Length: 504
Image 1 (cartoon, helix red, strand yellow):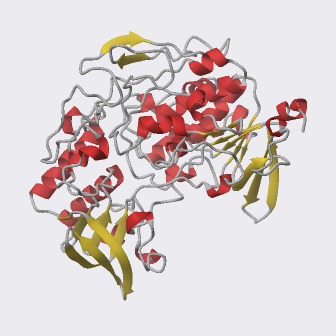
Image 2 (image 1 turned 120 degrees about the horizontal axis):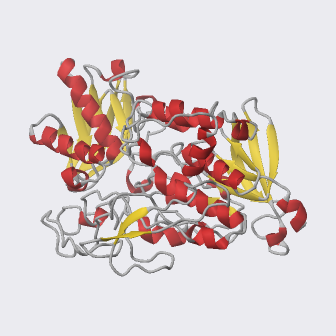
């Protein structure tokens, strides 16, 4: 395939979630032709799966700038910028109208699952002429037809919700986990709504120590107040839940901070049972119960419950990318240059410097992981981060290197996280000034602008006001903490535990 033919092909965007549709909007503004391939039956299919859950971020951070411009041209009225939408509201009031615009409707194929991506006419091992080749994207339609789509570039915004981490230890499924699948409820069941009967008056084990686990635990506790004999056990792999509790009032996304505060109070009141350092080895169905076997500290773990909520996080599906030459971090499976900013062993919150195409590129030019999938196994992704990623990538694909490299985020303040906890085994936080994302304890306010295509309107440049640390540089990956402060220092390395405990 020669260069002219490649440039005539569309840019394939995998996934019609918030970041995928934003990517399409930015590509259109840059004069590029997007084609969005969505496995579900409509936009935001993965979001609808947790539609009952309310986001931490208010609307002002949930709408992409280029997407807003497309919508406003149709007379769309933005929701209250300070309101916190549910997943269903995000789809109904934003993603569905966006996908229905004249600009995007004809460029969106639903019921089309991407199963493989490769350079067109070259497998992973072939180098000769590789840079001149576009991409071949293999898809399977809802009725089982296999179709190949050719693309000049590919943005994989397919997310990670389809590949949850297993319950078992060491990153492997527990013995019997597949057989016990009917007893597993996923990360965010609708405890107070559609799934109420599954949990009311029954015993539930929640595994995990993230915000999904906290949401489910609080819903179960609320259900328990109304329905007797609703029992909740919470299993965590670490030695302390402090990392989830610590944000509280210091979290600049108040709804997120409140989760930890409420959960801590419930635990202190004895309303749920906490199992620390849990290692699940085996699942055994027994009638309408499942027996969960393993260890907890140095003791035997042996509980029988009706349902297990596996809020153990997610990992990217990389099997579909086997023929693409990727540069991935061996720990979190994100683009290697991004990994140092998001590794959960050291980072606890959304304190990630604005970043774009330069950190997301791979050895195969024109291929990008964007959105949640770009974070690999790291759990702290925010929509605004993904929107800036695709703005930068679209600029780079259009040949505007200056705009691609000038990245910014419209977020309220620096994050607060640090990694120096060598002596912190008693659960106390380290020095607040040692920020793992760079900067000092007292940020200064600066203004940064992000490029946008000519004629995009007065709001095209993000013109983001960012609180950044002293000594900010202009290079990629510089020491600047930009994000919503969570009030949680140190990431996993800050978990309170006895010396030698495995906090992963």
